[in-house]
Image 1: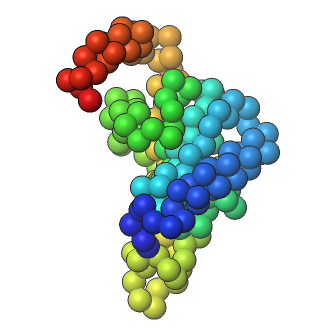
Image 2: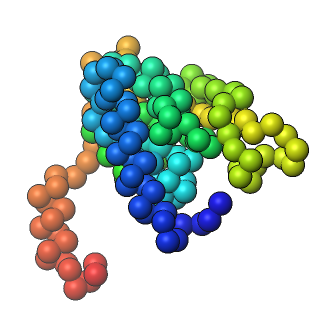
Length: 168
């Protein structure tokens, strides 16, 4: 496993993301917005998917096993439409504010791995496990879940423009 960035890490990220998105849409599950296989995960170990929230867990488990995503995959994070799965800060924020680890992280065991996996003990069969993280607002609480507190984007742009010399 090469630490990114390297000669093919970003290319793999873009290509894998498109392949995963296309395969998810082809499953027929409605509401798939975007899939992103993060460069920080070598373009295959950490995948984020944003959906119109109806089938979060199903989409997570499907993503973990799609041909484009199954090889050495470790983490799949499913998020609501208001989260950009290509933005690691947004993904971590969603995991931090919209999950209860005991309820929202499921583990698949003995899934497709590789002999190239650095976590595979020498001589072991090429299997690994993966976590499916449902980082969507809880379905049962969609109507009552707290609104996101955030600054107005126009105001933030104004502040950045006004203080560009200080903020860089």
